[in-house]
Amino acid sequence: MKKYFLFVLILGIIGFQINCGGVSSVLTAPIDDNVLVLGGILFENLTNTSLGRFETVESGVEIVIVGKDEKSGEIKGYRTVTDKNGYFHLENVPRGQYVVKGLLVMLEDQSTIRITNDWTFTKSPYYKLTRPEQIIDFNVTYFPKQETGGKVMSIGIWYYGMDMGSFQHFIVPKLENRKIRTEKVHNRQTTIDHYKAKFPDSPWFSM
Image (tube, rainbow, N blue to C red; front, side, top):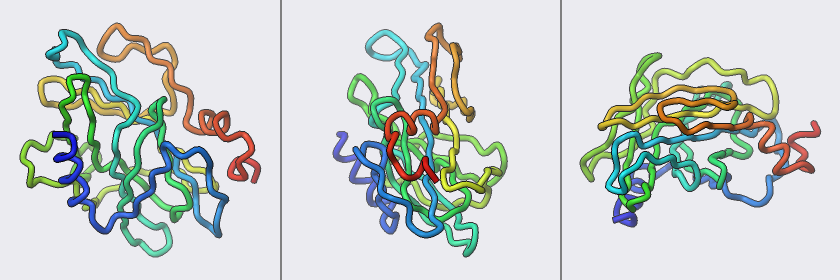
């Protein structure tokens, strides 16, 4: 079942740039005016699962990200995956605006879900794709305002809470001793702090 959903997802993103930076052991050096985009994912399944409990998924989440080049206005899609702590990155991509267009999440019971967002206005909701022929496309007309001045760009930690098929979603810089929908306490440092600790000698952080 997992392979089937992965196949459908890949079909939906033909033409996307593959940038599996979330699990790489090194960061490539900066090239020209390109930037390093950092982010994080926290997914909570708040539906009473077949295992009889809520669950949190952070690692191994497959992500489709769409970016808009600040100079050319070109819109391009990327695919990556979260590391064991739920963080991800895109290396040497154009300076611009970036959004999480969709996710593929493997749950504890080995089932998979795909969610996406049309990104047509400020509060466009995420929703679940239920038919195999549905794809996560890269159509985006609204990009949230983001700071694009530096070589390293954080788009924050993206929280998703799934409850009976609907999704709560918000973006925060970090999480400190925070309970969201369950009694579980979440602590997540900023994306920049995480990557500085993970890659202390990277030229991205010495420029």
